[in-house]
Length: 243
Length: 243
DNA sequence: CGGATACTTGAGGGTTGTCAAAATATGTGG
DNA sequence: CCACATATTTTGACAACCCTCAAGTATCCG
Image: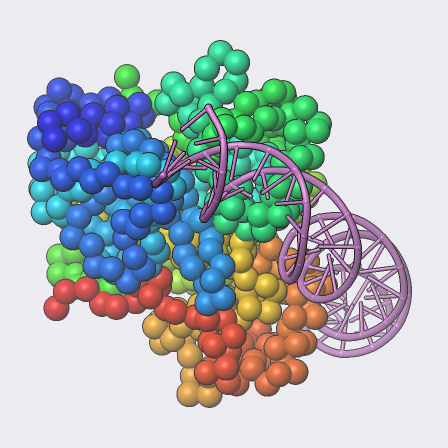
């Protein structure tokens, strides 16, 4: 359990300077680690969660289901992300969280989490910042789902995921980064069908913009891909605050 | 200027009990009131705002523009809403805010706003709660834009706006509430064209579900409308907290 | 009354969905 | 290592939804 939460410390420190005391306070949180297989649920809509979840490894998604069985993915979460921080303030969750790959998460009870935020205002501010950035990303998804056609929408998502992973040091020198999700999941995130996602992928591949094989995304032509997507990374708020 | 911020006090008190001190502290904030004509901008993408905006009257919207001139509305704001609270923590705004009707807003400088939140933790928690509820609504918009077909999507938005205004006491005994926006704005919120919005309205009207005239929405058949939308108000988090 | 804005309707085309099936990849047990 | 079962990806044909363009009607406001 010790050092399990370094993923969170690293994430927060990326945007906000944290003192050694802040780091220690985070790593001292009582956390239960859970490993998850793909598709395993962590949280169901309507649950009253008593813990906050921190992704340690793998990919996790939040989603909502519709009456006819359709699914909409709301966000992707990777190491250091907090999919349900809001459960601290809004007891009833309105969405589900499940593992998209083999994953591990830390579960921290609400009590110690709240205590940490009271004792360590800088940590509270950093967590609040993460929440606001998540909201900003969700708004950009609204724009994509509302106003971007399929190819542009997919290109934009790839630009987003690529940029996020580059900030996390997960992109290699050849423009490759992990994208360990099926076309079905991609479709549920993009508001399309899996069949159509497949056709758009073929199109982007045919234009020499990307490759997507073996759970790896390769950006072959960033200038043209980001131009197609009209990608502006401002909304990711990756600029570091403070000293 | 005095009492301008009662709209905010009333809004926060709807979900969170506030002490008299809390209320007084909010109403003592230094606020500049601005009146806006329809379409007047309050905030442009890329701005570095030094104030927080509180809607006092009228309807305000946040939005993003795309390269080809398309617009996506991200949220509607009415009296008591805070369209840009996040500017306190994320200095670069990535969206625009403009008046959708004649409107008035209060502008509170970041300094006093921050000071209030430090001195009055309950107010800070109430403001955080509002931010989280906004995020929850944005996620529901993602679901609608991604997975609901036109009529269902529009029905869902009407259910949402109606339920919110009922909580604010703005619905009369005949199921009427204000909806003072053009079909073009509605289209920009629903990710559709104005022409198609018009056709869907005709359809919903023809089925005897709603009326929309003279800036007023009338819910004629709530059971069928909410069933069509598969509307579940959980995500609005209207349940009052605490005593 | 005149001009501007908003709403309404029609015709036709493009994007995306649905249904179905084949091809490929992945995983498991013998 | 192979044989098999399963999941994922790929492709085709067709239909539905939504968009575009265009024109006409209603409404608002000075």
